[in-house]
Image (cartoon, one colour):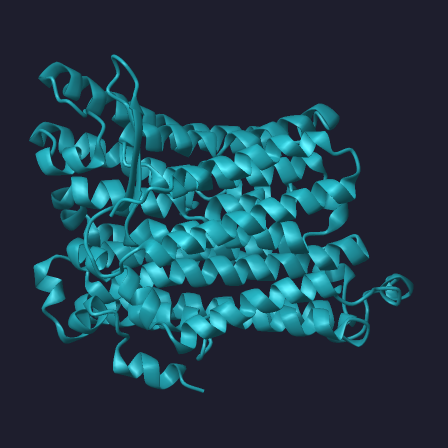
Length: 516
């Protein structure tokens, strides 16, 4: 489907222009208002893309093609499929939430500009139909965060966060660049008209000798970007010590997951199928490892960081198992966890803004002074843990059924991960909000204010979306039904659960548990 309006191009350009416009305002309040307006308008445009998108139809829609780079074969082609059209909305929604409800002292011009630029590059990555263009956007999403960290390093030369981030992101981007260059060299030597076009690459395939090296390169890029253990160390550090919001946006937008679904799985199906059990086991073990590390933390920001790492392992496992239930569950869980953990982190940042700390050993008793703060922390925590009636419950239910139908013994780490994450959350809630205040902190905690209207309005909106998605998940599943079926293959699609998912339905047991 084509449209006369260059909607996707507007989506990509608008946040970048908004970041540039911020320089025209000197007052911080005007800067925040301008960023909020740009983020809200971008979200409206992404919703327009969803309205124009025809769900259940395979292939790319809303095509746009602008120009080809002479001599390189790189073409500025854009489009969306069932995977990416929802990712556009999630990215825009998370950006709006961070701008609207983030602590004002953390939202200076540099941070607001970095959030908008990261949003712009992420949207471009999801819309690109050319591997070289995807690689450019994949790298460009990291530039605003790197610039903020470099500014921090100049202010505090002893800070280790910039160095850690730079090393891991180099490990993430370099393999993808090498893979893209190899694809380009092959295309140029063969005289292919579109050497980097994703559709052309998937249709033509790669030489058999290239499959394993390309698979290794692309999987390394994916695992580092998704923060899957053992490539996860950069994320908790960035969450605890990095600029506000950018770590959440980099991970919860799930660019690594999309690279896996859009490039690795369709381009190298043989290697993906042969490595499915190994990757599924790696993902579940990584999820369990992240959950154990989250349980050992005393800093709420690091808790959220390790919960994100744990969720990334679950997503990898769901895709690796490779049937319709597990793939649908992983994709649903990516949306649910992204929204819920963003809301949870907004509450954590609100606690930090009021108390000056996120160390649980220095908190306690906040429920008496800030009951709304406690309530939303509780709700968003349960929204991320698969509580019945939430979207994450649907995702985890599909994941569990997909794993049980294929490899029952492999499901044990998933159950342990869910249980440990629940214990981590309840422990954090008890130490932060219940009981007496920490020694010497009673006077400070007595001055804590509850959530402001803009904060609780945005966090409530995020929680409402998680609940609405849990009660009515069919449209989300239908939006990606054809892509899920093509990724799972005909054998998996023949099962009873697979048929229901491919029609955009949820297994009956999931719906019965999700109903209030």
